[in-house]
Amino acid sequence: MSIILSLSEAHAGFFAAGPQGMFSVGAEGDLTEVIQPESHLYATDSLDDRVLVGGAPHGVAFSRDGGQTWQAAWMDFVDSPVVAIAAAPDVADSHIVLAGTEDKGILRSANRGEGFYVCNYGLRSLAVLHICWAPPWPRDAWPRWRLAFAGTDEGFYRSPAAGRGWKRCEGAEGAFQVAAVDSRFHTTHIVLAGTETDGLWFSDDQGRRFRRLDNTPEQINALTALAGGGFVMSDAETLWHSPDGLNWTPLQGEDPCLVLQEAVGKVWAGSQDGLRKVNLNGTSA
Image 1 (cartoon, rainbow, N blue to C red):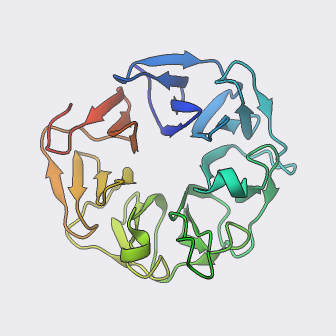
Image 2: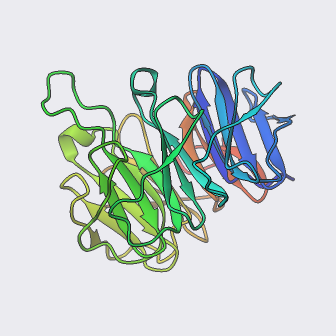
């Protein structure tokens, strides 16, 4: 059974990745292996015209033909494994992709992942665990920020300048390995960040300040925001659902997982036992 650590879905397809390799995901969750160039694979992300993988020895590599052929990205002489990749939600226009490394910080691409440059200004730690983005700003808003977030082994960071520079979020203490931004962010301003041993943290001011939530698990292994509002997370024992990020209910009959993502109209959970669909009513689909 394949261990799944990362999921991505866009026009280029729906893909899963982990230490056993990369897979194209079928409609029912069936996995078809895709040959890719990384010896150690940690992350994948899909754009409208390409799929990217992150790991070692190449850092980031990309394919424009669904994994038939690959090209290594230029990595600004950084040789640290890439453990997280996140394209901006408006990547079709901005061409921005961020990559987080094991011990060399964050790299930024402005050409859809073909070349990256180090952008570590403001980071206190270069051990990056997670990267995510807020939804695009409304077209009538000014200024129209491109707001990114990054979790490190010592704190949580925000960048309103699309990853060019970073500021540590107030109150957030711990190793932040997962995060999720509310799909209704421009109304609720909610960001959640999960840690390995210090629980779940909540912000309702666009990620400027965080507070730890009581009555939530100490270990948060996976976290995702739902397109219609609400969140799903995994601790070490089960999955949880929340309509608002504050109030959580365990999903009965659901095993824990390592990654969660909503794709092709369903919520998917990747774990040490492969990939499965999640039923938010509390039983596996």
